Length: 335
Image 1 (cartoon, rainbow, N blue to C red):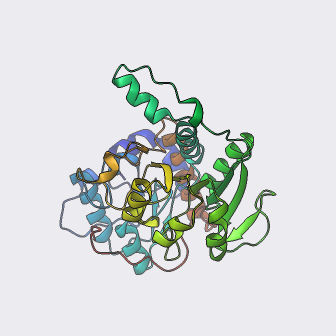
Image 2: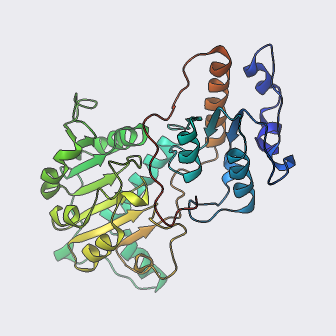
């Protein structure tokens, strides 16, 4: 783990390890290019820093290299909610167990997504632009914002983020339908559909909200044909992964006016290239993959890690363990 994480966790770490204790290997003290003796690893937020899947900062690259060069590595806990980074997928293919911090920032991400919904529904991007120009510009009477109450929202994904977001939308009197891989039982009493049912739902959808993990089933799911099926004037929110959505098709739908707006926190390429048309579309809100950032996340992630560390030493099940086959790493992602 990092020095910062070790300093923060201190004696609590040894308590979680049980009577036998554990020997800490600090990432910053491990030489580059040599085999690492770690059996367990904790990837804390300070390790990832501002790195993305496509651009790694030196500290992140060093830590990832240590993980790859640890022949005895058996388990890694990640601060993130997902494990789609190439390094985790490579470790899964080796048989290393991976756990995530899914749920730690779910409320924060859902609140940010809700802020995007409210901003788009109330026309705040246009009002903010008018403010910057010192222009008094209330909405025209013939184009007033529509009431949110009664509008149809489809939440794609029923993990902790999707569940929190659905609760918020229901509180605002939107009609919510949940889409997950298999329809199964109704989710929290809400209408529930499977991925195969999504095309039939879209013509009646005012808000398509993406909160699903990136898997072999969701990569490229919201394609150009899917976007064309959305009700004219619909809006889209993506706090899932950029690869779930066809960005060029989204740009086309926005430019043509088929979609009324979008809030995007994640992108197919991160950082978002400076020449992306998404920067300049007036009906688009962008944030740099920070929907889940909050001062309280660190303690929640630490708590999940310590719980799993104690469970590991007791031979008990681990929370948020990644199951299923590794996701193939596409060209462009750092291997």
